[in-house]
Length: 46
Image (cartoon, rainbow, N blue to C red; front, side):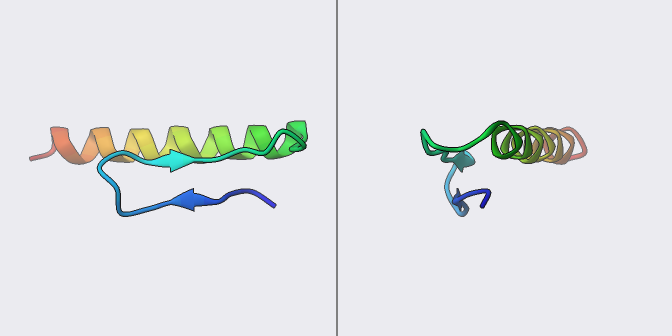
């Protein structure tokens, strides 16, 4: 399971459990980086 991902806040928040494996950490890092790229491109396009 990847998540939870908290949405609707000023900044994105991703949570990882201590028991999460490498696959979950990599998946969450990918989601986090895509979210950061999307937010940055939104603000530069205004």
